[in-house]
Image 1 (cartoon, one colour):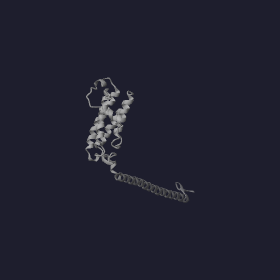
Image 2 (cartoon, one colour):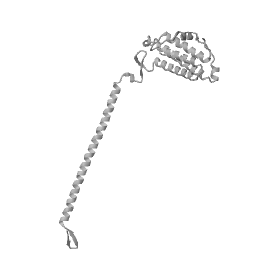
Image 3 (tube, one colour):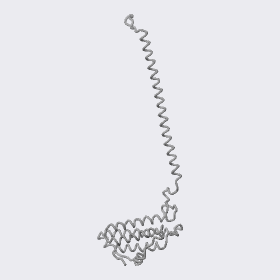
Image 4 (cartoon, one colour):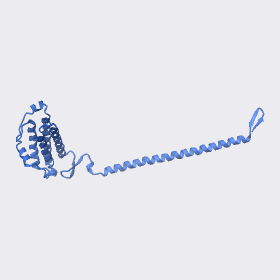
Length: 225
């Protein structure tokens, strides 16, 4: 109730007390909200810390796993099937393999030209047979192919005419010849490594050289039969 007094009205003590009570409850609710918010903040912080800690532990575990892996994962070393060992990645053996793959890819391009398909495929077959010889000593040329290569004596021939005509097959065969020549250089160097003493035969070096010359003569069109 509102009581009159001099110069105006005065609120009753009941209403004033009620307002004080409401204010007290409001402060209590706000205090609980602050406590609740603080608890949520601490809970979230704890959760985030646990997640970050888990990530750190996972990273450490991954690094430990990487460290425990065998030496073959090192970029400086590679597994060599020929001798069943892990050797340096820069070894002549891998350079030989790379050059032979390039030579065979060039022969494949020569096949794609569509000219003298049977002859080109036979050359590719001979190259593949010799390529397998290091890992499979029984992979040798049949007598008819071996005799063909025995006629392929090295000779100097002018390739300018073929190249000036834009003969794609001849170009690809000459590329195969050049890559195979480089492969032979690496193979001879590799043969000097004692680890490859029993893997690289004189037969392989000899007939790769003959095949390289044979490819060159086929490219120029001067094939000895």
